[in-house]
Image (cartoon, rainbow, N blue to C red; front, top):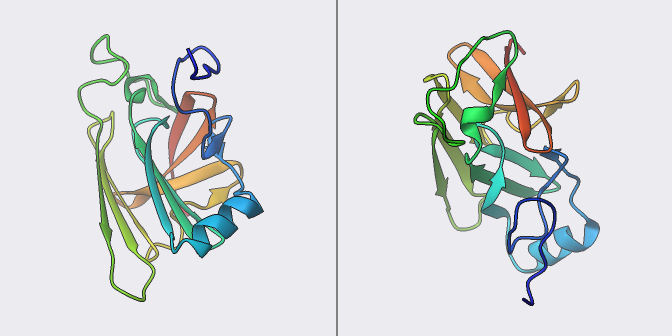
Length: 165
């Protein structure tokens, strides 16, 4: 009874790293608090973003959201991809997030995900210059073969497309 419910999806999580399906700007107070606490990487779930984790760096803070709850509903721009089953998650989307921490250095984040198409996405920070950047309103999620997966979100509706950057 004491937990606020926001929107149509009851949850104990009432703050989010995204705004209307896209990465949001971190507030000054959040950055100050995290940095003064020695936190440079935040990994969270419970924020669905298609069939691949959303990874980005902002003002020295790396954020990873790795919830694929609605992966079966992702739209692939220009691809007719019927749902493989009736669940939201679908049978294929599997994210793996590995964080390596060396004292005195920015942690590295490696992501590998099997997408709803069955293809494998790979992303890393800080070594991959495109991961987590915004390009024409689309966020770069990582590399799939020789192309880049970019996503655009509106709420929980995520549209993906492959791009050459």
